[in-house]
Amino acid sequence: AQTVTQSQPEMSVQEAETVTLSCTYDTSESNYYLFWYKQPPSRQMILVIRQEAYKQQNATENRFSVNFQKAAKSFSLKISDSQLGDTAMYFCAFMKHPLYTGANSKLTFGKGITLSVRP
Amino acid sequence: GAVVSQHPSRVICKSGTSVKIECRSLDFQATTMFWYRQFPKQSLMLMATSNEGSKATYEQGVEKDKFLINHASLTLSTLTVTSAHPEDSSFYICSAINPTLVGETQYFGPGTRLLVL
Image (tube, rainbow over all chains, first blue to last red):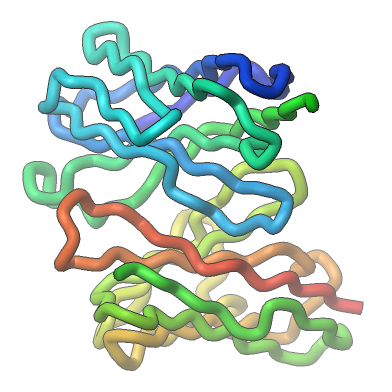
């Protein structure tokens, strides 16, 4: 079974600064996806970024980037130029690659981290 | 696109009644949808995987007779909480995968807040 660990329950960052959210995972699979989702106070889950395990290049989406270390099973999220709207709960998630594993695209979530951006 | 809607957004019901929650993919056809439950400040807990035209696959510990799932079309899945009790009060979220998009990404509905009195 897969596990996703987010060991920091809460973090705080000053507006315009950079913050890194940690995530580690455990799996015996070699083909999989990793995701970061954001859940603001509205509770709508929003995809932040996605990484395919076979790609060595770290994914980036505007101010969001990841540091994917496959051997270390680490998948951290860096938020640059933090904005007040980034205040939310952030979840790291793992999915076996359905094409290679026959799995049904189920997500395994970490416990989440609450990020507060201070004005 | 990948827009998912849920209805209702919140519902209050009396203990013993049944409540139906709808999940719709608005701009794509979803062969697979997922139902989650979330308690405040906690992570999402997968309840079941809903496949169009077949029976849902429930996670261990989830009562299939309590939480009835129907995926009758490629754009609609419903979750019915039968004989609801106060302990069923929670935030229920659905998600769907757009098979035409690369990457097997789940797109989430806005959630339904259920309060059972």
